[in-house]
Length: 116
Image (cartoon, rainbow, N blue to C red; front, top):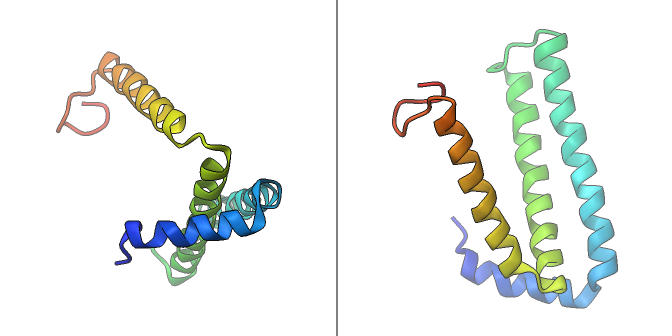
């Protein structure tokens, strides 16, 4: 497993080299590729009824993992270049806490699984 701390200077160096506008455009492209990969898996498993644990679905899932990695890399670069890493983390915490409250209102309790 790659140590994230070792990886970050490289991500920042790449971000600094290209700059915010090219990396923001790259992020949009990578998000579109992820969307396409997710839709392909959905289409195969829901519409074409391909078994979700089949080799074909597994290959699609690995492709999704690759696209998620691309999005995360670009997203981290754009966060860094815009200087919004702290506000993003604050928003993540707020949104997670809000969703936790929603789950509790729907009867979820920790350790019981979704839906109690």
